[in-house]
Length: 79
Image (cartoon, rainbow, N blue to C red; front, side, top):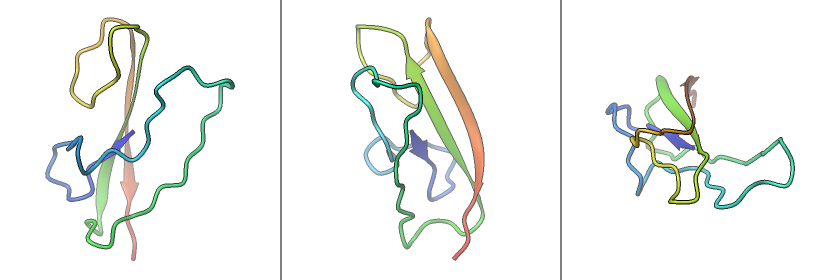
């Protein structure tokens, strides 16, 4: 999961990765606590969730998948 905290339309893997699962979860529901950085944009930002069905690597925010899912959501950041 990635969130474009600075709203520059780019998901930076180094600074904007907020959640990662490196193996198949034991349940269908996955939860995580996400901390909003103090310098996050205070407006609508994008969140991308990607799941890759493959044994040849992990999901990234910009990879084209042959088998998997990618969903984008809008979050409204308030302070």
